[in-house]
Length: 146
Image (cartoon, rainbow, N blue to C red; front, side, top):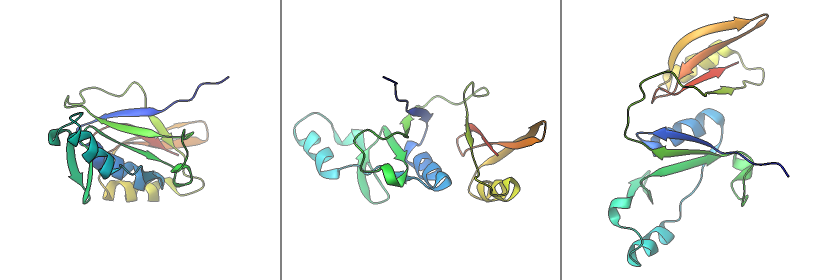
């Protein structure tokens, strides 16, 4: 039996970064159940300090996840990214990054779109006939587009 994987990203503002990546990938932010969250507070398992209101909804403060729209109802999605709170600053280049496949879209146009939404262009590289742009998301996490 194979194992499954989830990509987890440390983030200062996990809900904002989840929104950014969901829009970038055409995915959706997993809904959080405000009624359940309130019941956890009422039962003493959490406090109001464990929550916040994001885009008008009560959510857990410490994280948000995204997944492809077609996998939103899946109990165990095949693809999922979790953004969890971490107050430490990013200080060095990532040892792991992800490649965003553009499915035939022009990488220069996508680069311009992403920069307009808060990405930072870092460099362009190539290997043989293949080239890509490396960018950083609004919190500085590197990724490539090709």
